Image (cartoon, rainbow, N blue to C red; front, side):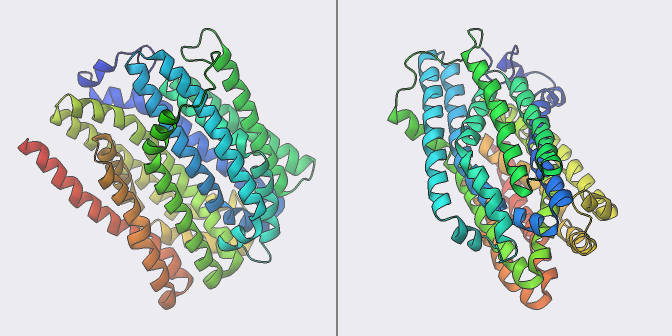
Length: 451
């Protein structure tokens, strides 16, 4: 059975037209990624319009917290989906089913432990991430609810990743889109009808994820599903758990690093621009993230194509698939750059009606996206190195932008240019990371020619 796209043989990856393959593999991923981004935007829009600028600044403070939770979820989700795909490829259904049971147990343990620890130390953690006296109540109220439902979130995300790798990418996409739509409905109900404030947005998120998880459970208990719950699969296999966590360590480290960097950004914004600047960054980050998620969708579509052809020793198809994906990604980020530069005010106005917050966000967005057209190439190149098994270089390139370039720039530039220095740190870091990435990429492509 094809573990990537249901009903298609994986051997077509080595022969079919590359543009056709990229569309077939990337489209479900792009829709799912965009839906995930919309999921986050829905919270921001409803909170900004229904709860005010202090609430949206409080929401921005929770971004690194959410990234930290996502880091643990990605570690289990990515690791387990790859392991299950490998077992299915080996026709080892028994191991695949045992892995499915271990995914549920591992997500339950990690999600529960994360919630307990974070609830015990919630206020100091939020302070660390940049919460002020004004924004702390909103951030705390929002995160408390999300932490209450964190086990639901982790199991939902883990099972959705497994569904995608076990031959149901379209169904996984549909469940993700369903969660987005349900989230929007509950957000409107809880915030505007029941006046539950920022906590209403959090409850809307949990209700949406519970809905999607219910659908997933129906799938995994359906006798017609290829991979499903069986008696005896909830049995701990430490060798499987070790492999899952080992494979998932790369996305885990990248997400943890992103969490730390956002914390530094938030604290710099508070220092040089106050809570309004934090709220502005929250808005800008949501808008920019939309385009990054589309690029990530192309990246996910490219990876099985590149990996297959690299293994089949077809370097020309590897290069062509890479160049095609970079072209698509740069087109997306260039469109994002133009929209953010030409129409920043209408975009920001989706999230807030406050004039001062709007002005700060508009000015910040125009600076933050200055190097955005190049970001598409950098993201795809990192995914390319991962696809051909050069994981260490992939991790280095992912972390270089955040740790090697961005953190020092955040400490230096604001001392000269204040708030504008915070905003400018990000495009400068993007540009420097892209240069390093392209140097390594060109070197790698030259190696292909000599092999």
